[in-house]
Amino acid sequence: MRFRAKQYATTSDLEKAFLQIQLDEKDRDATRFLWLSDPTNTSSPLITYRFKSVLFGATCSPFILSATLLKHLKENPGPFATKARIIPLEIKSLCGDNVWRYCPTKDNPADLLTRGITSEELQQNEMWFSGPKWLNSKEDWPTWNGNNVTSSVCTTMSENDDKIETMEKNQNVCIGIGEIIDIERYNSYTKLTRITAYVMRFATNCRATETERKKDLLRSDEIKNAKFLWIRYTQGKIFSDEINCIDNSTKRKTLVRQLKLFLDEKQLLRCGGRRIDNATVGETVKFPYLLPAKDRLTHLIVLEAHENTLHSGINITLAYIQQTFWIPKLRQCVKSILSKCVTCRKVIGKSYPAPEIPPLPNERVQDATPFSITGVDFTGALTTRNRHNEESKVYICLFTCAVTRAVHLEVVYDLSEESFLLCFRRFVSR
Ligand SMILES: [Zn+2]
Image (cartoon, rainbow, N blue to C red; front, top):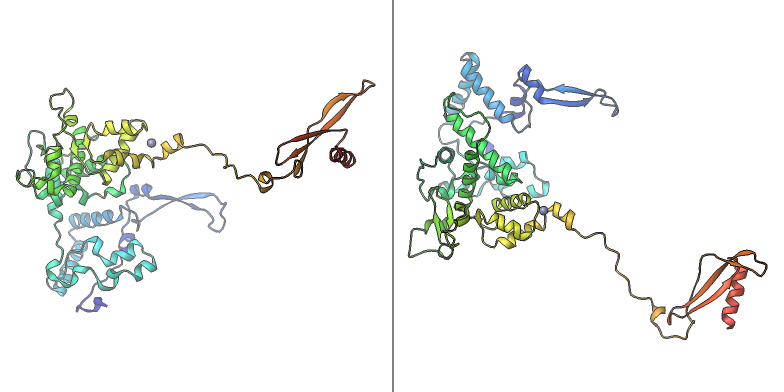
């Protein structure tokens, strides 16, 4: 209903915007898909089709859409571009100022439906019915600082060992790579750092001239920088108080004192309390990076260490991690992560156990005279010779007392009902 509050409203069909952009002939191979030659017959042979236009719903589609529009605007300053330029101007003139504001994704009610939500969740969703919490107080309205984020991260990325730009200490608390890349979407530390390195390379390349752009394989220093970005981001997020009080000798936090924390030249929090400063070991072993125990990055690092040590136990994984990181309550954290490792479960898991033996039945444990509760069984056939030296089969009938475990044996000549009854009479008469 808020839709009606203003004088003008603009609507557009996003799906149509995508489908109206044609794909270049040579790019169409990238959007191939298989389909039945006869949709009514599921066993009909498959045919390969190709999309002629930009697909709606693919992850890369929004980028292709805006990239195509920008390219057309740049290359065709004709009627198309003029029209495309006029539309935003027209919208602006109709709406006046202060209408277009920034709304973070998590506070955008429109995203609830486009991203999927169950009807129960929607009915209980306060944001859908009354909008974001900050809507009523103008002072709390969020502002977009996207430019700061990108430039800050890019600056960090381009830093070299000998040319380091000092960052404001408060700045690294809230801005970082985690705002750009969602770590929850990755389940491997290597993958995360490599993707981060590629993203940072793209950001640097965008600002570089054609000749300066890097196009070859990722270099080790780029991956290292990506790792530093993630460590700095996580430290800033969790240990901001520690970072702020590091230079303040009177109000030092316990953790800072205990671990002798300090900020290195890359503004990363490191521990100095290992007392092995003079040992001939690597720099990260002497002064490991501090990371929190409960964080997605730590989780990924532990998993990676566990896999790099070929699914070793807790102690080896611990030792491997401590060569680079200092994580409080690490043993506990490693233990819980390792207990969920599927590979380890498969290897060291118990085999299928025999069922537990149930308690003895009533008859077996009650006081009774021998053979008052009796079980009967036959042995297999035994070969005997009679007085004429002829071979014949005999069986042994076993009477077992369920209480005393006493056994009575009777010879039977065959498995017929008659011989059993005779044998039973013999047993009873003894
Ligand atoms: Zn494992």
